[in-house]
Image (cartoon, helix red, strand yellow):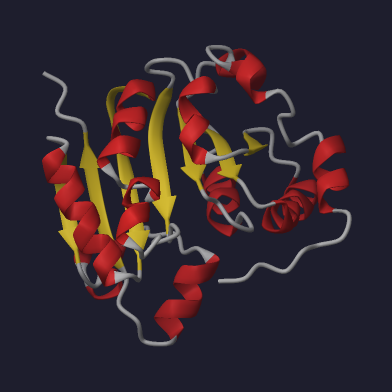
Length: 214
């Protein structure tokens, strides 16, 4: 999907108190930044921030970090956070593949992947955020007992993701091919895309999984 450039977005991001500007310097120091020892949850590819802002409002005892590479949508999340002023939420503008440069081993307690880019061409499979290559990166930063929730409306991407989870030796806690008509919908927080697609009648696919750390 083509993203419209938002004039002045990079300048807004550069001066925002809610965006970490030198993210690699924060590796191993995130709890110092938040000023507490609360769990750290991250959303990779947070878009305009509807999902993570709602979570941060509902769970003040959890620290949240939203990761987004596109300035044009990150700036919308900044606008919402400027209104909310949530102390347990920061943003990073970065490519997901560098996640290991920003978070230390075991520093992250949970990861959310919502409606990630499907990268439909086979030659781009490694770029998918649920590929084995990315799962290896996540396993490095996840704390013991940590896990991932992945949601999408793209069936081929979902099928690919289930295969990759198995290939990586991770454990699936639950799988649903129609989230909004399943028992797992209770407590579900919707993203912008999820609301749009579900209103169109599209099924939402979701899997919860965790590393098999013996």
